[in-house]
Image: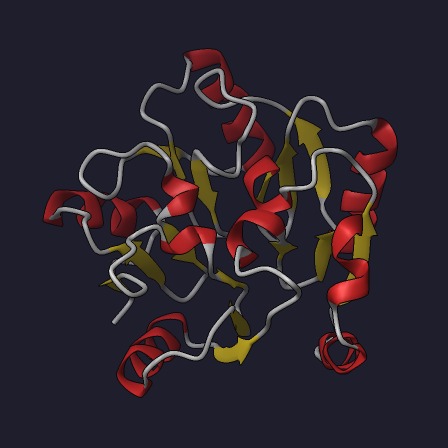
Length: 225
C-alpha cells in the first residue's frame, strides 16, 4: 500500500500537521487506531505523538533521516525526553535562528540535498547543511520562495508546482539528480507540501485529491511497484 488518501478530522491539508522520514512519523495528536495503522503501513515507519507547543509539525520542522531542525523559538517547548529520543534514533538536533522560521515551508529536503528560500543567510544555510547533512542551494519554484510548500521530494522522486519555469526545472533537476514531475493535489491545488507526506517507502495524500492526482504523485515519487 504505497499511497493512500487521508484527512485529519476532515482537513485534507495533512502536510501542514504531519512530518516523516523513513523511520518515524511525527503526529501532533493521537489518532484513531484505524488511521494510525494505515499511516504506519503506508510509510513503513513508527508513529510518534509530538507536541512542541504547536500542531504545525509539517510547516515548521525540517526532518530527514540525518537530523531534525527546529526554529529557535521552539527550543523551550521541546521536552528533554524527546531530545533524548531523537538522539537515540541517531538524529542530529538543531535550532535555526532566522526570521524565516517556518522551516517546512521554506526548505525542500531529502536525505542528500536541500533547496531553500532565497533569503536564508549563509549562516543559516550552514546550519541547515550541518544539522541535516545535506548540500544546500537557494532557489525558487514557479517564482515562489516557499519551496517546501510547492514541491515534495524524496530520494527517489520529486513533485513540483505545475508552473515551474524551464530554468528552475533545469536547476533543481541538476541539483537533486531527479526529474521533477508537475502535479497538483486536493482537486487542483499546487501547494503540494501542504497535502503530501512522503518518504522512500510511501506517501499520504490529501483526501480531496482525484484519482489522476494520486496517480501522478505515485508516478512522480516512484512508488509504483
